[in-house]
Length: 261
Image (cartoon, rainbow, N blue to C red; front, side, top):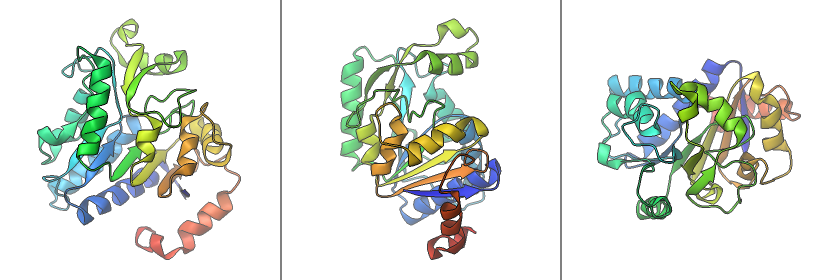
């Protein structure tokens, strides 16, 4: 795991987008693991802009999203399928048939989870997984007490997650209370992980996830086990990190980061 601290939210998102773009350029038939959320909106805007400028080609790329609300139709405006179509897929030349998101209203959700997991394997696994960090330390919808070996499955959402996400619905009461999510074990099998964390609300939980013990209560802490995980944080999110001097030294001095400085 490497932690990179950038001076602002914009700088953190820009670095993550540049790293992801570099992976796409190096491997045109890349298998991407994608995430949703406000921070990702800016990142996807950057990728779409670079595509329109002829710098990024998604024609051979394949993608798998982390999660989807259980019981929700893909065409629902609150679904993550709708989010991805509007935020990224409609703006780049990726083949819609190569974009994979759990089908939230599948008749058999357990079968859908198994099918999704198998489809990832059939594509050779995820090359680069993009992640955000939830306020209670979750990645995807791997809420507290998620097994560190878990696979794609249904998961009950915590009251905190429901309270955080329900205002995005016209009627907050209609927000689903369960979701389909990639498991922690699924995420850890990705060849590379890029996690973007911004804002002072994430400072305490980021420090716990990165520098604290590995625990099922904070699913992001499992990323300490990943051999090629990069955490990119802005100054506010990095405020509680004890090793911040070392993390800054790495970005300022290590040759691999020279192109991004």
